[in-house]
Length: 227
Image (cartoon, rainbow, N blue to C red):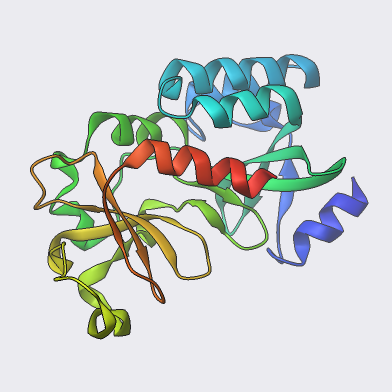
């Protein structure tokens, strides 16, 4: 326990692991409260079941990887924010930590608020029922970021636009990056697109790719982060 906390504290200074039995029903959603009150083995099983109940089609490869490699699921807290901490076996038997923020229906991102009602239901379900972001713990990237950290493209100056080989295929003022690699790569939705589930893979140093399936890319990239 101490070694784990020492590692986690390098990235979240005041983090602690919380016994879910000490929580009240309104502290976290009841679904997660019930899961986290189980024993270690059953916590893992119930967590996978919960992922399947919400995103079985969208994140089938992610769920498959977690089914085979999830070692533990615990409740963490820092800055009065609760998260689910995933201990996952990766690569050649190493262990990494991933964070799933407690789901939310409060859209604190003011720009995203304007478009949230148009968001595909599968994405809403992930954020509102499963996790407000799921990503590699140390970098807070290589995953779906919390809604408050979703990148509004209209706020940034993208130098790559000057180097595009074809006309820009998105409207910056209606485009949001939900997935971040932490190294200048995004999976983004342009709400001006008639098909809201068609995503743009956007790079700060390479040509974008348009009309990609949002969940296919997210699922593939999360698993890449595991491996």
